[in-house]
Image 1 (cartoon, rainbow, N blue to C red):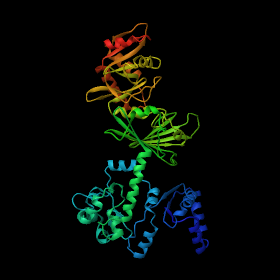
Image 2 (image 1 turned 60 degrees about the vertical axis):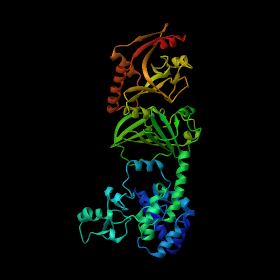
Image 3 (image 1 turned 180 degrees about the vertical axis):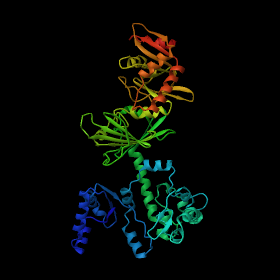
Image 4 (image 1 turned 135 degrees about the vertical axis):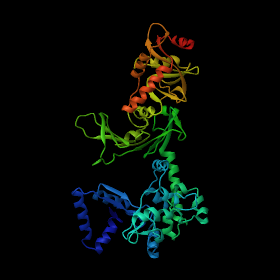
Length: 529
């Protein structure tokens, strides 16, 4: 790790005082770069160098492919020296600048909370660190052989001297004893303990100790940073996040670029909701491809343009590949968690998103690639079908292209609620099958986010007459349903779940052949049914 505390002007001053040292240092860095040695340049922004921050980034990029921002706010020194701490305090950035440099990632914070982070949380038993110590499984040993549960703990009474004892004694006895060493005071309860900004604050008692030599005191600077943090999050949620609900599944979409009224096609308005639901999946859009050099993708399980798909331990990696033979360029990289409920989508450019009128939330050719997999774990699937709510009953008209699905939707327009004329979701919940509208329509643009209890499935056949013929052969029914099943990238577990579901649909839902012409009299036949 190489740390840069300043750019051109500061470096010039350094060179003036130390002739030759800068050139030698830069020569060494560039030698390492040419030799392929990997190192990260860390930028340390401070009040005196903040005006040079863009130059610092340029210099960092010239030295290494990787750079990072060190601390966007500066905590005080472990030694507690007054003069040193006064200078550190003077060098702290304005709270708004600190937040801009280290923007909160709402998706990550929510995931972190979901996964029950083992980082500091004040315990209910009256002791500051009991929750932290009882859940952490790591430790820190400083260069002097002092061991404790966190690298920021600088109170000598909370550090164990390994030169006078043993690791086992520290791990099994000393560190657990610290859980009840620091009591929560009334001052803490009055300030940090009851502050409504606590979820937006970067405070930890270890920082309070460095600031005041008291774990229970608040840090005024971090209070100001927390207020700016809250403002940033509120702005982010308003301008970078949207929610859509389909088949009782809420899709949370976030983007590094702002989302406006023109970003998504108007058809999505039917499905937009105000917030997360009981079952929410998460999509985050980025607009540059990650550095994949030397990355282990895991086992390749699928390769057919536009996707090469890998499984790596508990995650999935989708690479958007070119259909042109020998073209190794990528247009998209996607990482999913094991259940495909969280996706990070790295797009190669911003143009398509900025142009707007997007027809899919994922920016894939179809959202079915994602939702088709999600539904298998929720007793659901996509069918190539037209679905309607006809006089309170859900009817499904199944068939391939040109089978007459859009024709049926047109006939029933004004007589039934059209859920979608081309793609319908079927889910079994609480013992009953329901059909749900989707935004993947065909010739008829009418779509609905509503659902209806599935009462009958019609396999369409064009004819000179209009009649309904009951189907009894369950094998033929299952075969017909499978031929109209929408398949994402399929795996063994997806097939097992989906085959079992399709078998239940064919067994439990009445199925018919609907012979129809274009006269519209098929509607009367349906009403009689």
